[in-house]
Each structure stands twice: as C-alpha cells, then as structure tokens.
Length: 419
Ligand code: GDD
Ligand code: GTP
Image (cartoon, rainbow, N blue to C red; front, side, top):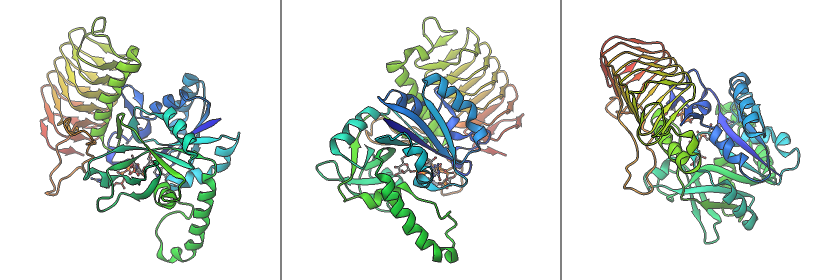
C-alpha cells in the first residue's frame, strides 16, 4: 500500500499571501473553485493503492476539520490532520509522526509541499521509483538559470541519480529544480533518525548560540536531500508538465488559469458552458453552483466565481478570482484581481491589477514571486487584492492596490496598500 503526506506549514508561513491568508489558511484558498490542497488529494486518490492521506502542519485543527470531512467523503479515502506543536521543518513533522506514517505498513509514501500547483504525475513517479529501487525520488522540472536560485537545485548523473543537491544556492548550480513532490521508501526514517540524533548532540551547545529552532526541527532539503546526494539512493524524475508554486496572491491568479485549462482537458464539467452558461462566457470560467450571475454579465477568460456570489447586470470580469459571498454591482469591471469574501463592489466601479505572469515565449520561466516593494521602496505593480468584507463605493477606481479587510473605500486608489 501507499500513503501520502501533504506539508502545509502553519499560520507563521505564507505571509507573502496576505491579506488573503488572514482569515483562511493558505492551503485552503480556492483556486479554480477548489482549495489549493484539494488538487493534491484528488491526484493521490487516483494513484493505485493509496489508502491514506496525512496532512501535517501547525494550523489549529479546527481550521481544517470541515475540509477534512469533505475530502474524506468526496474521495472516499482516509484523510487525517496531524498537528505539529511548533513548526518542525519540512522533515521534522514526518519524523515526529513516523509511527502514524509507518502504521499499516506502506511500501512507499508521497511527500507533497502543500504550496505547489501542478498537473501532478504521481503514478509516473511510482513506476520510476520502483524501477530505480530508490530511497527517495524527487519530481524535478526545468527553470531558468536566474530563477533556479530560488529553488532546490540538482545535478543528475546519466542514470537519473542525484549527484549534487543544493537548496537555494547563492550562485548557479543547475537549472533542474526540486518541485517539492517526492516518493519515499520507509527506510528514509533511518536517515531521519541519524539526522535527528546528530542534531540533538549539537543542540547542547546550540542552546547557548540559540538558533531559535526547535531541537526536533529537521529540514528535508538541507538535512536529508543534501546528505543523500551522491549516495546512489536519491533519484530525480524530470517532468515537463505544468508546475508552479503558490507564494504570492499573484501566483494564485496564475495557477487559477492553469487549473482551469486542466479542467478543459480532464474535467470539462467543472467549466461554465459557453452555450448554456448563465451569461456570456469567454474561455475557461468556473462558477460555483450557488452563485447568481446576471445574463448580461461577461465573464472570462480565466475567472473563478465562488459560492453565493451575486453578480449584477453588465458586469465584466477577466483573469480574476471572486471569493464567497461577494456582491458585484451593475456595470463594474474587475481585471487581474482577487475580490475577498463578502466584499461589495459598487456600480460602475473599476478594480484593476497588473498581471505578473511569466513571459510565454521563454519556455522554462516560472512565475516570479516578487516582493511587495521594489528597491526604491515603491510598490511593485501586481494584481489588485480586496481583503475580506471590503466595500468599494460606486464609480471608484482601485488600481494595483492591496486593500486590507473591512475597509470602506470612497475615493480612487492607485499603487497603494490600504491599511
Ligand atoms: N508541516 C510543516 N512544518 N510544513 C512545513 C514546515 C513546517 O515546519 N515548513 C514548511 N512547510 C511546508 C510549507 O507549507 C510548504 O508546503 C513546504 O513545506 C515547503 O515550504 P518552504 O520551507 O517554504 O520551502 P520553499 O517552498 O521555499 O522551497 C521548497 O519547495 C520548492 C518547490 O516549491 C524546497 O523544497 C525547494 O527545494 C523546492 O524547489
Ligand atoms: P513562505 O513563502 O510560505 O515560506 O512564507 P513567507 O514568504 O511568509 O516566509 P518568508 O520568511 O520566506 O518570507 C518573509 C518575507 O521575505 C516575504 O514577505 C518576502 O517579502 C521575503 N522573501 C522571502 N523569501 C523570498 C524569496 O525567495 N524571494 C523574494 N523575492 N522575497 C522573499
């Protein structure tokens, strides 16, 4: 049998995703209508012999309980949440909960970073892992030289074995990067035990230096992958399918487009029909069944409309995500933006952001997760985000701005963070 582990971090992570993660854990943010990690769960449920999915993180269990129940019944698979008492790093939680992972005797288990989006090639990884008799197999993809520095970089030998692994190198190592999706054999726990005890010994004097991390903190990348490189037991499978991280709100709009495109290929029933949809539909659009959309509205391409959203006459929305219970009044326009839960957009208002997608003519370029501010202290133009319960008055314009929750906007804003 197989199991899957999804690493989701905790409330102290994902700060670049604010304000969207202020009242909802980032792993549950809906992209193309479904929570980020639901795509992981769906992909796992399609792999032969996966019997259990364990989600490891440090969010309060109550944040995830409803989601877990929904997943269990939707995919008819056991889904459980294991809560870390403090962030233990990407492998510390795996080690801490090793008995739960080993119980039932799985031969292999997937480890999936919860903050990646992809057309997951999980069955291919299983076949490859078996063929290589690997201890750990890493799904890999190609990046540009410059962007590779933000990821784990690998050099492979002819056999697909990882000869060198460097996490976020400061100078160029390789354009082959770690996608944060792995398949491990159970013996990986032996490697973790070695690392754990080495760490405990070091802890005696670390306490005086105080690196601020829990003594049980283990990094999968720094402590395990780096150590296994060159031993003949770490393999990488380069994959050409779409893959992207979800770090910033801008990357959510990017992933939205790709997941919608995947629906077209694999789940066309998730997409609003251009023929029999509630309004004029252009390209790929997701509309939650409980949303109310006026027939004179024009949606698309690449729009997701959440539950109980109400969209009035003559509205135009393109390249955007509208979250649950938002009200979009007549003749307003929304471009490259995320509209928060229960927000209100007045008549003839305009909400516009700047797309930050990777250039389509550079084959391996990834989404750039730019910091909020550039070197001159100016806000980097990005998608516009309205936080939860924001009210935008009629006929006002919000351009390239980030609006924190519960703001009442009665004038125009451009390139501002509205606190
Ligand atoms: N449970 C738990 N506990 N999860 C964690 C913790 C922790 O203490 N720390 C991080 N995570 C989760 C995050 O939520 C995320 O899903 C994943 O582990 C990796 O997060 P980061 O540690 O922020 O690493 P990264 O995303 O910058 O880089 C990793 O992913 C890249 C691909 O997306 C590395 O594995 C890179 O090598 C890789 O290229
Ligand atoms: P995760 O991305 O989930 O790890 O959460 P985070 O971004 O909130 O945590 P981190 O401590 O990595 O980031 C704190 C701040 O540093 C972010 O708001 C960014 O502005 C900046 N930052 C961190 N890592 C990067 C990076 O790789 N690239 C850029 N451009 N900025 C970064």
